[in-house]
Length: 386
Image (cartoon, rainbow, N blue to C red; front, side, top):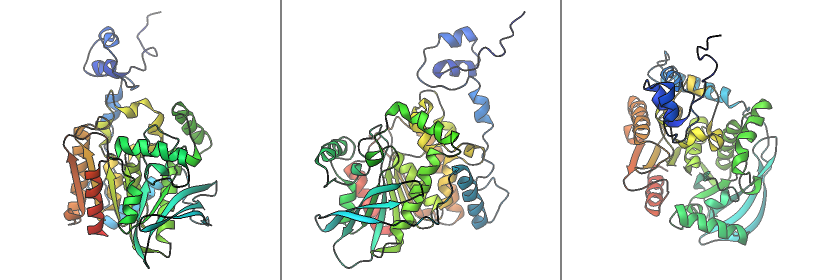
C-alpha cells in the first residue's frame, strides 16, 4: 500500500514546525534543532483562522455598552464556572498585628461554595473609608508562597524567609502590599489554588490538575477568574473601603489576573498590570513559554480565541483607567506581541475619547521583574486615578 503520509506526521515542535511552515521538506524539518514548542505542524493555518470576530470594531455591535455586555457574557460563558454570586463570604478574621502605620490580619472567606480561602488584609491607621487594592500574586513556578509574595508574612517565619528571597529576586526586596498599606490603601491578597495555604502544587502536576477540572465540567482558569472577581466584591463591600476606589494590581500571572478582573468585575475602578500583556498570535510562536503547557492552564479559557484576542478581553474594562508596564527584555513576551496588544487597546480607549485613561509603557533594559521604580510608578498612578 502506498503511504501518502496521511495520519503519520501530525505533530512537530519548535524550529521543525517553523521550517515546515516555511515550506521545508519533512526531512529538513526533522533535522532542524528544536527550540521548544509543542505546536502542531499546521499551526500557521490555525492562527490564520483567528480573526476575533467579537472584538470591538469587528463586531457588528456598534453600541459600546451593548458590545461590552456581549463580550463579557461570552467570556463568562467560557469560564465554565458560575458566578457564585449567592455564596456568602462569611469572613473570619485572625492573627491581628500592628504594622508601620497599618494593621495586619488574616481573613478566611468563601469565594466559592467549594472551599474556604485564607488571605492577608491590611488596613491603614485612621478613620477611613480608604481606597483599596486587590493584590494578585504571580506564578513564578514557586508554589510554597502565594499571598506572601506581596505581603510580608508576620505569622510564619519559614514563609518569611522564602518570601523575602522572592522579593529580593524580583521586587527590589520590597513587599508591595505593605508599601500600599503605608501609603493609605486597604490591601487584600489571597492565595490562588496551588499556592501557599492552597498548595504547594508541583510544577508537573499543573497540566493534570487542569485536565481533571475539564473532566469534571469545570476549569482551573475559570475558577481563578471567578475567585478574583469575587475577591474584588468582598473588598469593595468592607466598611473600611470606599467602594468607588478599588483597584486591582498584579505582576506576571497576577498582571493577567488584574486586567481580567477589571474586565469581569464592576467593583474594580482601575487596574495596573506589570509584565503580562500580548497579542495571541504573537505569543503562539516556537520557543514561547506558553507552548510548554503547565502554567498556561491557569490562563486558558477554551474556545475564547474564536471570539476575542487577549487585548480585546482587557478592553472590556474600557474606559476605566488601566496601566500596563512591560520590560523590553522580557523573554516571556515578544516585543511585537506587546506592541500589537497596546495598539489594539489604544484604539478602543480612543474610541471612547478616553486616551488619557490608558497608560502603556515598555521599560528599556528590564526583563520579567517588578522593580522598586516600577512600583513607585504604579503607586503614583494609583494616587492619581483613585
